[in-house]
Amino acid sequence: MIDSITGIIQRKEPTNLFIDMNGMVFNISICLRDYEELPDLNQEITILTYLNVREDLMELYGFLEYERRRLFTQLIGVSGIGPRTAINLLSNISVANFKENIIAEDVKSLSLIPGIGPKTAKRIILDIREKVTKDRATTDGLDTSNINFTYDDIYTALSSLGYRKNQIDKAIKQLTKENSFEGNIEHVIKRILNIIR
Image (cartoon, rainbow, N blue to C red; front, side, top):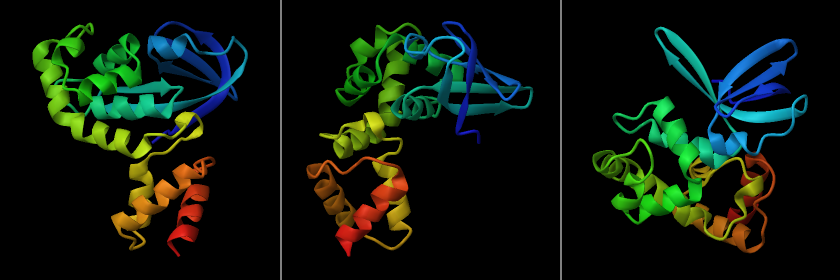
């Protein structure tokens, strides 16, 4: 999978971003909210990506924020919601508000988003509410602006090493109190290992 692309902004449109990476130009589908935050033309940018592969098509979707990409991947896992629909949904509502509506099971508010009817809203809530609630519960109180990973990533890495969930949770709470959740996931895991040991 192409996790991210770093290059020069050659052209930008409300739904597409064209990045020149050493002479190779990538056409990346984006949501309107990311378009509004893009740097100027000819500026360097690193954008997180998701590669959608079908028999007759390969499409790149881009995101400035990790949490937006994460919600996008959760949405396309819902029956009846493809990448195009998911990117349109993310153009019409912030990630925070979308998650709030899902956690609150607010079918009415979700149904107001263009492209989502009551049936689709109920399906989204049913399919991803547990994941969104878990993300919210484990990131409350964190400044996630400089974090490009989630609790699930940390838990997966440490549980594969044999550590228990309660050990990991305890260490994460301590790092949260110390505001030590900066850096990449490797640095954070090292801090957690020091606490657990």
